[in-house]
Length: 214
Length: 102
Image (cartoon, rainbow over all chains, first blue to last red; front, top):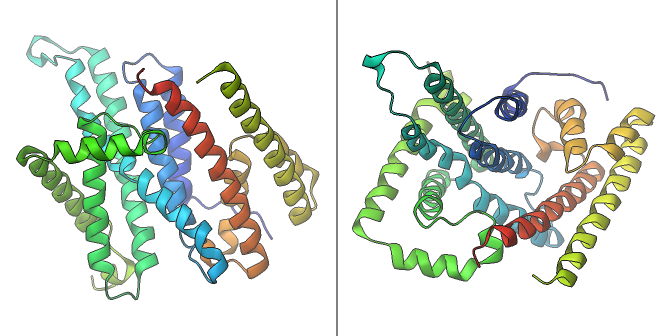
């Protein structure tokens, strides 16, 4: 085997993740929570790369494959969740008519960078899933269900304040609280996040086949 | 979590981590016959060794689709990634315990 360092989307995502982490650690900022959130998003992206490897080819491979696919489903909402972290821009008042405050715009840049990275991870992840489903006539429906699951996961994380780790430590409490929290407003939030994801998929996550028509 | 329970979990995690590092070191040495790769396999923890080998060596050879690995390599990398995910799941369990209120 020869060593070939190719900065494709996968390696770009890796380089950007570690660089972003380094900047968050080395500089003064108020968004230290992005360290863990970005790590979870990046972990979900790396697990998505494993999906073709864990596609079962024999009966004996099913248990391990199910475990990895389930883990991916549980972790994947962490990617688009970061987009909702934009609400934390409210840490600053941004009274721009009173003058420019560099500290505000430095933190603004850091948070927006994290969100842009998350959108990049999301698009890359969706491309992996689309490739995995290529050839299946249910691919569109499966992808749509996946998007809705993401929105539900984001709702659980954002409003019920459950973390990915609680899926392992408190699965029943999580399910119970979610069922209690389904209201009209919750459904509106889930719908809005679904539309945002579909918009990003439509704009950015095109397949090579779709691009070939241009 | 009692002290004894915590000690057991942390010991288990440490043993798993050390065993994984040794396994990766031996696997990478067998694959590459290189002391440098063996060292990377041994010293870089929590999957950094796997990540580096994957990015530099593994993915370019299968056109960035791990599903295209030949059968013998496929078995090895399924095992490696499963062990790695197991480490992270235990680690998450421990972190989750600390994050849980009460």
